[in-house]
Length: 564
Image 1 (cartoon, rainbow, N blue to C red):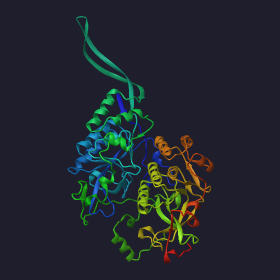
Image 2 (cartoon, rainbow, N blue to C red):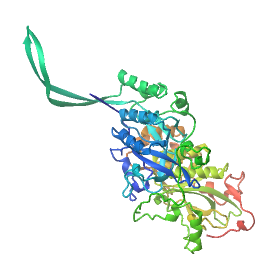
Image 3 (tube, helix red, strand yellow):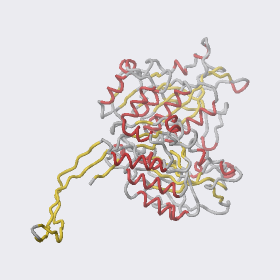
Image 4 (cartoon, rainbow, N blue to C red):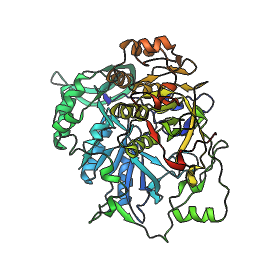
């Protein structure tokens, strides 16, 4: 008897509620098990889409034998509606993935690789509804940043009618691990002699003894024929199977967009936004996954209890401008905005900051401050920030204890694509009111000063740092890293960032966090120098020639310097 499965391990660490605030170790990275794929119906809460918003099926987690039955039950309750599937999975059981692909194709559903960020609560968490198929609709947004579809997942993905993989998503394959269980079987056979020959009357198994298991990574002809036939059935070329065969089981081979297009694994170039962007329902005719809910109809509500260290502020979740105005009209107290406590922030705050040192006015440097835990939302914030600032090249000032690996890789690639510099430091923000009520300082933005004492850039943060053109870490700051799974993806990323192979060889040996000395970090190419943040954000840089691109002059009264 042969059991076929794809061995893969990964973790969705984008939910800060699963983090240990004392050690900042992501617990799910240490677990041997993976949560089974969960299907949840999600409605977009993108600003401005109501009352007609897109909806989709979020499919996140490992593919197991019982996963196809879950999808069948959900689709039965949805009939006749057809919602696209947004998948984020490390892989799992091959036979189940084939079943999922056929279910998706039979239902004529579109599919895209993406992560869903939930607004109300994380499905499966305490107090969160267990079954979205019972009419409870989650609210959220989806993006391709840090999303993956690996191992067996591409087989499920092949079932989609329209198949999309964005540039920031990761779709990979590797060899199939075939696990064989050996048994010794004992029979009781009853026979009689007829003309000198045995004639069997009955044969019955009386016992079985397990003799252990063994694994092989060599794809049998029967399995290869099965997979090739399935992909042909789905209109996908056999080149996908060839990539599986040549990639070691302990590694992941990312399929390039060109390879996906050649093999017809994707039907067109595009990302998850083509299916779930908040504005698609304004088209005429509106896509089938749009649903209009009149303003007087309330969505199903449920209470999510906040942890002692986390306060849920309803006003922050609302995009209703009238509600915010009424809150101000009631004279609600506006809290002074405090700079994020650097590494300890549960969600990374990404804002543009202008230097507040009086010595620089009216021509002061500006930078992008990125402080706190690296999550899926952080990649979206950075992407939107870069779109907002246009062609300006502002350095990134980062302080973080790490976070989600795939989100960090996406942030690093975004930074490298825009040719930005990165420095490890903390931004002390001053002179700005609470972000939820609008920023109201003189310049209409954040102002602050840089500090490097006691700042940390650990684990996944070091990967973001590697994306910078200039990568600066002062001796007063801490830089550390350890071997993060999956190793193959981290290695490929560091090679793309031109890091010295010595860096990967070093972190591969480290199962625990290791602090890098400045000389070593410079030698392996993780940093380009031990200079302080003043090289990029100091008050005097805007007087130098040539003038840095991150300097900007404020004219008139707004240029009057204020001491914090």
